[in-house]
Amino acid sequence: MGQLETDEGAPTAAALLNAASERLRRSGSPSPRLDAELLISHAFSRDRAWLHAHPAAELSSEAATALAGWLRRREAGEPIAYIRGFKEWLSLRVRVDERALIPRPETELLAESAIAEIASRLTRDGAPILAWDVGTGSGAVALALALRFSSALALGRVRLVASDLSPDALELAAENLAANGVGGLATLVCADLISGTGTPQALPDLVVANLPYVPFAEFAFAVGSLRYEPRAALDGGPDGLGLVRALLAQLPERLAAHGVALLEIGSGQASAVRRFIDGLPMRAAVTTLPDLAGVDRVVRIARL
Image (cartoon, rainbow, N blue to C red; front, top):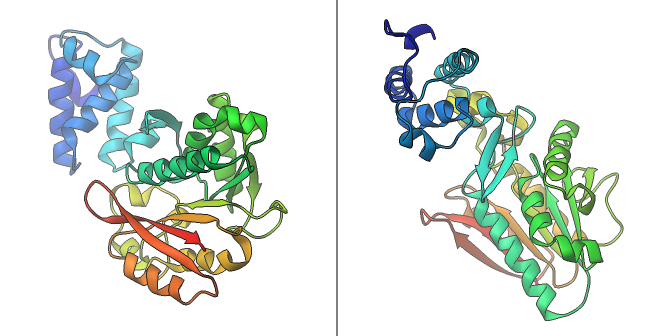
């Protein structure tokens, strides 16, 4: 298996792990041991716990050949999620490839916040709820909502729209929803934020958005996954807030009375977002929700 072959023949899982970790360390991976564990366990079609419990296991020749190719791709900087074809996120397995951004752990807070908003409204009254996932990408957030509220969606108590400007991303989102048995519970539309062709007539009660918020200048020194993920899903303009402001500007006309918008933002952007909201022709209560690192990660805008 290339540089991982030994004179004694096929290496064991333990030997593979040590050799692959060293290779990835030399190539500059920020997490060589974890990367090696993920790729080698994937080659065995097992999880990382199994890998550590079976250090003497040997790969088939076909799996060893596949692993060699995966390691070369990782050495070149390709994200593990693209190599494996999925990302473990919010206890889900989300299909990913170059059509959309890889779901981040930070976005779990956005999904959990959206789930809490919908659950609160469902218990408060019997009014139907229209939730709109803007810039759905892989469909990860829409998938989390569809699985959590599958019964309410089937009964019409909740309607779920997931939109994106990229037809390729929408195709990936459709695949994720279908793979989890909830393909018929969400409406996918190609739209520019919450306006444009294909948007429903009703105004959304909940807008959820993880839009690009990486400042343009960061791409001049793009490393790691930033070189592989679609730029349109990351590039937020000079200060990272171009599309965030564009969506916020639509809220006075497109958010239902007493509706709520939840937007994921980057580190240090909360103050600028608050200032922009203060200038909108709309009365709203604005709060921010910190992620596990204490960064203001989600902005909640509740229309008054």
